[in-house]
Image 1: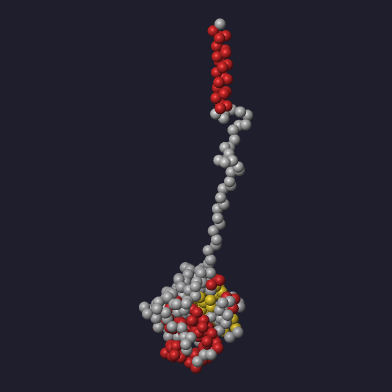
Image 2 (image 1 turned 45 degrees about the vertical axis):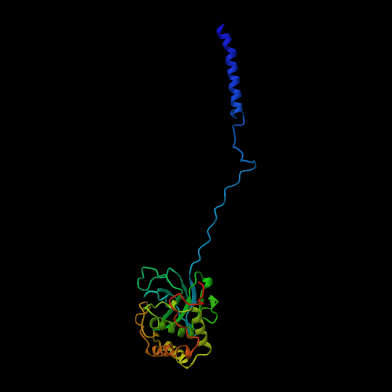
Length: 279
C-alpha cells in the first residue's frame, strides 16, 4: 500500500522539474544556440587591422661622364662631409650609379655608410682624374635635387664641367670658410648651389671660366682635381691636390659675391639656410 501511494508523488516531482528546466531555458530539442546581440540583428564582423604604409627610403641615381664619355665600371664615393667617411659604389658600363644606405664604408669596408646630411658630394674616379657633382638627398627620391640642366628631373642627373666646378667650390669652402672645422656640405643652401651651377653654364666670369678650362685640361691629362686638401674619404689614395685648381678656387672665394652674385655662401649653421629645399 505504501508503494502505491508514492508513485503519484514521484510523478509530480518529475513534472515540476521539467517545468523548472523549461522556465530556465534548459532542455528542448534545439540544443541551445548563441545569444543574439542586444537589439537583434547579425553580429558585426571584427574590425580590419589597418595595413601600415611603406616608409620612404632615401636614395638616388645619376650618371657620371667626362665630356661625352661615361665613367664605365669605375669607383664612386658619395659623402655628406659630416664625418671623414663616405660610401663606395661602382658605376655600370654606361656610367650610371645608385646611392643607397647599403653602400660599403670607404674607411671600414665591412660596414655600411649612411649619410647623416642632405647635401651629398659625389666624386667619380677614372684614370687618375675625377668628375664631381652633388645631390640633395631627400627623404625619398621624389624630393631629390641635383646640379643637372634639369635639376627637378632625377633621370637627367648627368655630370658636366659646371657641376664639377660648383662641387669643387663647395668642397673647398666647406673646409675653409666655415666655423668649427665641420666639413659638412649642409652649411650651404642647395638651391643656391643649383643657381651657381646654372650660372657657370650660361655666363661665367673670367675667373670662373679659367676654372672650367683647367678642369677640362686636368681631366684630359688624367690629373686629380682636389683643391687645397685631400679628404679622408678619398676614393683613390694616389689622387692628390691639384695646385692649379686650388689657385682657381681660391680666386673665386676671394672674389666673393662681388664677382658673382650667385656664389653660394655658408649659412649661420648647417641645416639653417633660409629657403633651403624641403627633404
